[in-house]
Picture 1 (cartoon, helix red, strand yellow):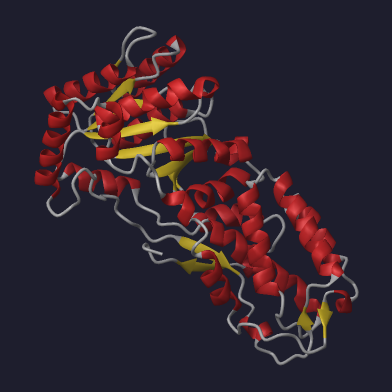
Picture 2 (picture 1 turned 90 degrees about the vertical axis):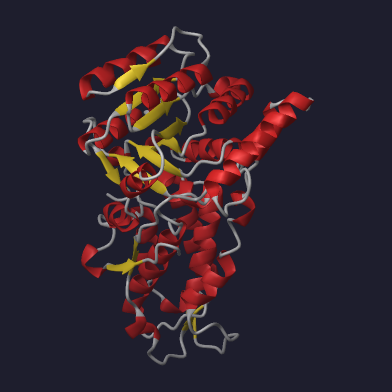
Length: 418
């Protein structure tokens, strides 16, 4: 039984089409419901995009004292950055993520809505009760509240005023609106992990990838999976055990490294995590390795000290790519964790672990919407090779196929810059 089963049962009980559709004249609505909704929602994520960690300049200005020596160091870094970045603004790392087209999902109802009909879906009590049932269903799936509000707004925008020629068309029209609303949550700028790494390697090495996230989300295992993926592509990888707060994390990463053929740079428990990251980078430079992957701490019970530690690691390591690792089973908790890390440390994308065991999809549906960053990779098993590129259409098909006949789905190609 799929996560939408309860809502769809409620939709099927609407025996009286007059309870949701009226034949009276209604206020004019946009003929293109999708277009109207897109115009309403494009501004929603803007307040979440800004981050105090967007630039190296901001990091330095906070972490270094304001004495003359520190100011000279900041200015020196600015000149180096300007020299290597060309036309890029001083202090900002050039955007080097290689975009990739993604695929969305829809149900074609053009042949239905184009039919002339005086009967229009209206915001009747029965309609509002149906929306309330949908809200409950989505919250029970552990979606974030902002994402749920977005879906409900999209549903109303797509349905109210839509033509309803026949009663038997209602279920398909509702399904189409729902899939369009869920698909819109995943519409962010996707980028290709492998191509981005290869592109960066043309001009710089080693490439530094920093993983952030709370303890218990599979961050260390994800570091091993990414390492294995890159080693399989012929690259030499160094992993930095920068979670020095837990001796177990250090040993776990070292064991993974021995199994997959990576080198592990570590220190004793309680060591300086930024120093471990720096030592790993220096070692990679000395030995000609291609990639450094930094595994970091995630003790949210001491959030202030954790974030200061991560800021220091970020400043010292200057990573090319920062990935947030979240547990798909954590649902809304994973969304709140992503928002917290995003507010302190602007990451480039997310990795969702245990996606194969999540039947509700709340975290996956909400993280991109909450952070305006794509889910780049997904863990789908226990093996080192169980790490896949996240594709929105495939995720939605697997999530919805128990509730909606997959033969009705239409794959829609998205522009990589959409």
